[in-house]
Image 1 (spheres, rainbow, N blue to C red):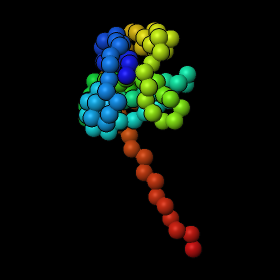
Image 2 (cartoon, rainbow, N blue to C red; image 1 turned 60 degrees about the vertical axis):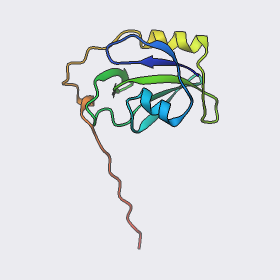
Image 3 (cartoon, rainbow, N blue to C red; image 1 turned 90 degrees about the horizontal axis):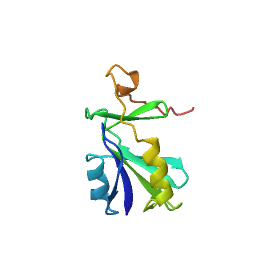
Image 4 (cartoon, rainbow, N blue to C red; image 1 turned 180 degrees about the vertical axis):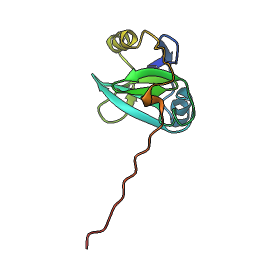
Length: 122
């Protein structure tokens, strides 16, 4: 399937990707991955542990920083990956075209964990 790959310090580029777990994990540097729905039938896939693993900062995504490589892929509306269209590739090549320079002092680069507890009501 056709994806758009975005690596730290580089412009996005098109790439073909096998639609299987091993290939998806390899594209984001191994391990666990997270999906973010961006709208217009596009999902962003990144390494969920990128900050914890010390991967290089890549791009801003709203108020957070994605660390490590990520890719954009089409969404069929049922949770399955599909190839990006020409229009989607053009839109996200423009959106992520400029590599970002980070100082290393950004608060968003610090890994954070949230803990929740469940208490029984008596």
